[in-house]
Length: 231
Ligand SMILES: Nc1ncnc2c1ncn2[C@@H]1O[C@H](COP(=O)(O)OP(=O)(O)OP(=O)(O)O)[C@@H](O)[C@H]1O
Ligand SMILES: [Mg+2]
Image 1 (cartoon, rainbow, N blue to C red):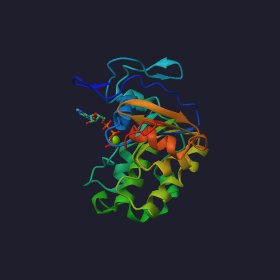
Image 2: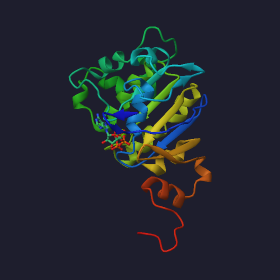
Image 3: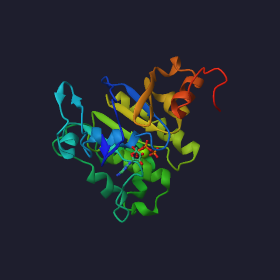
């Protein structure tokens, strides 16, 4: 995956099993958003392939990936500020995708939304807007939900609240790939994690098998166990 001549991702290879939550952690510029956008079909990789249940979808346009159940909650939410909360949710619905998610069910997940359904989202708080972005994605009845930096700019309490919703999504059978700079939060909720550094996966494993020092080394690109190593 390149931007012009600049490679943003190289040799990134991993699988998502149905129903699991996988975290992709990494510092600013590691390539996390690029990876999610490539999976969502917003960028086409210059090499390699993306497969969904054995089918090669590398060249499938983004809207057809949504129809196939791959839905992105983009970094920065990307809502339509002047449209109402409910209108922003409805934009996410995809007629061809069957499933139980609809406006009423999103309101069950986020009960505060019902009373603010007619309010332009520009008047909602950051955390509320993030919830709307998640709700919009759910409206497409995703089988694979890609979540980019859910915690960005939100208070720890709000972040925890949003993350506490994940089990409910998983109960609905959704597979989740989440990108986070908040490593603790990401490891807390995921079955497996990968650390991305300068476009490469430097560490993979189950959170309980990853030591904090391994994660730190992989995250910041510090060479481990070099005698008298650099600072
Ligand atoms: N549209 C673009 N054109 C050129 N380079 C880009 C573009 N988008 C991202 N990059 C570069 O690609 C690399 C990976 O960026 P990416 O946005 O995927 O990182 P990230 O891990 O999501 O970072 P952050 O945590 O800051 O969101 C960076 O070096 C970035 O500067
Ligand atoms: Mg990013």
